[in-house]
Image 1 (cartoon, rainbow, N blue to C red):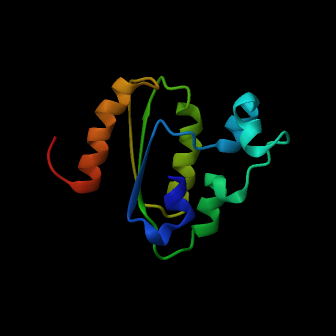
Image 2 (cartoon, helix red, strand yellow):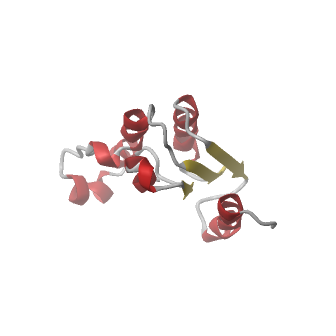
Length: 124
């Protein structure tokens, strides 16, 4: 998602499954994971903040199509809801899918098939 939102002219489509979409909020809730990346003050560069990238490119004539998949019991579910709204509110072509599921390989094994079908067509 970050690569496609950072350089939308280079990507036709991108997918995020159980994605950390609010890096700023997540970094402050788990600073031990992020201080080595962003420093002790956890300043997130604009190019790493998906919300800032959405805002930066909201008026671009070319935007990638996006697919978001998340399990309702995934710990990242709540942060994906405002992200979904931000994409829709800013004119992104978004396909969103959710179902029961947690942050697990079993969920991703199922959802990668939905992603591939969405991206390349075909029947499941």
